[in-house]
Length: 573
Image 1 (cartoon, rainbow, N blue to C red):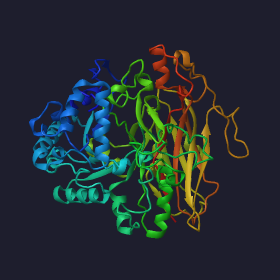
Image 2 (cartoon, helix red, strand yellow; image 1 turned 120 degrees about the horizontal axis):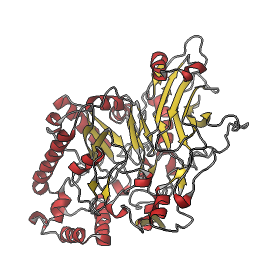
Image 3 (cartoon, rainbow, N blue to C red; image 1 turned 90 degrees about the vertical axis):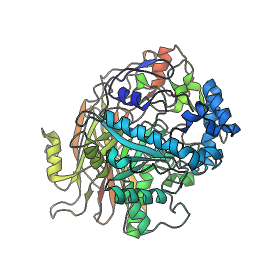
Image 4 (cartoon, one colour; image 1 turned 180 degrees about the horizontal axis):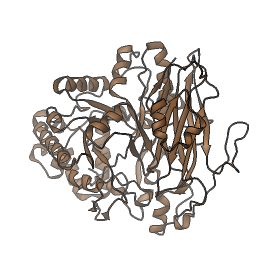
């Protein structure tokens, strides 16, 4: 619908580091290949747009689909308009009847699914490159984003026994979990679901009732905790960590939210209000989970963090100086930055508000489908905004400051603690508070490190939620010291926007520390995650301004501070 003419095979070849030609005719290649790729096409209408584009006779009776096919061939604004029209129709259950008729589309979709599986098997190379099998379940009631990416642990022999469960069958996540459970029972395989873009759910991602509007139950909490162990932190459609209105004491809370806080995916239904925010962002979702753990005995929102790209042009190219956008019409061109993406509530989303993000980083024992999936299931993963920073986090009861200087920091962490994604339950007799061993190493092609922070969330005896940000270790500690409130002076800024360049004269190439919670109460449930932040570097808009000799208006951000977020470590009394 958006002009993508590349195939799944080209998507895999691109991830492997090969040069391909984009749908706009531009040769493109990554600076460094990827270790794995999950190709998650939408289950709804799987492959059907190709049939509409090619004028399949099965759809000739419907004027909307015929008009859509012509618009896709015309390209440009017409194609964009028909895409938005069909997305809105999906959101409001008004899709043309032929494209939802199982007798018409079932055989087409089955053929496409088998082709996807065959292509994944072709490119899966255990130990070198993993082509994981997956798809996207696209629930979007009223434009509120409840999408999930479904990942198989399995190979084609099991995945081919089912057709992807789609939102056409049900938009209710509980129905998706039921289907996943039946798949596991039937095949002996395993699945997990990764919700993405909580920031566009209008508060529905962590709402305090189920899809039918009933209060959450222990059974609901157990099933959600089983199948949804991860949440997407960041991608091209912004950052889902938190918002300044609900985290006013977090000086870094405004990263990647501009334009995405207006409302839901389609800018329909209603604007995002302050009241929706506690169930719209990941940090507050984690806090809600702690509260439910006390009342239900199970935490439904016990999830780790992962990144994703969500690009729709088959090119997972999210490097700032090599960003090929989300859609084909957002690939490099002189005027892409001010293209209108969506309008509603008197607001406009522009291409310049899209972010070149993000990556999923996985601490796996080997590069295979099984090992990657197992690491995701135990939440030993972290998200980045596009940097390839390396980050470790361990929690325990007896780490010492000397451990941060260990030659094999990870061996110390595993021997005496739990890694990111783990849970601490009981202090040793000598320990009065948990300690956290945290370390980060810079991406050699990106900026130096500014600081590492620990984000803590907890619930008190009245089950009221709290959060606090601690600066744990930072660059240039001789001249940068904490004030009475624990705040740290900015690291500085070496970016020259005119040349889209920076220097690493500030910051550190690596940081490590052991931090002990000074405010620990053993009776209070808590989570802790690390956030590692780079020095300022040019944003993709700065590279576009240089490349195409554009003078950007002042509202267009030209610099940012890339970062990584680890999955949490939980403390449960």
